[in-house]
Image (tube, rainbow, N blue to C red; front, side, top):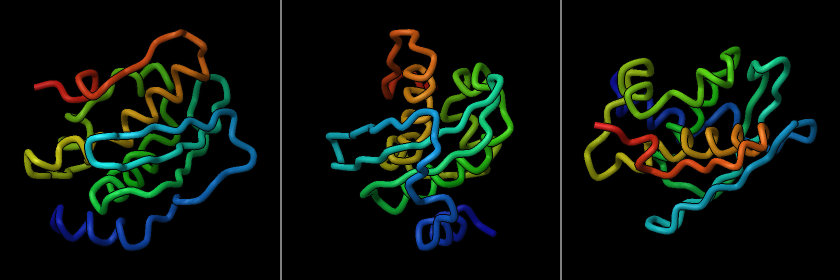
Amino acid sequence: MSSNELIAAYAKNPPNKHAMDHADIAHREENRLCDDALTVFLVIRDGILQDASFTGETSMVTTACASLTLESLIGKNIEEILSLDEHYIRDELGLSVTHRRRQASVFGMLAIRNAIHRYRADEMTDDFASVMRG
């Protein structure tokens, strides 16, 4: 399946797009440049992401990439997740987007990382520069 087909499929029917009542942390992120807003819900046990979902009004690319990213991170250590950036989305998930859509492709990753920062209460906040390297 091509990257465009995968994005279209996940944008149309994202399996993890729903609110989660039992989340350990819920975090809302807004992208004022494109008016996307999403809330991620994370369940974390012993430093491992156990479950994740999201809600929000987002573009097709943001919806698909957020859904695929969340799905792929379940079972990973939150410390490892904090080190991931757009290379993970491009290289590990195989998603290729145009330069114009880069921010949309990493918006979910940004929200996840900031949710983890809030969960850890480490007083850190990532921005697009943190997840868009190179």
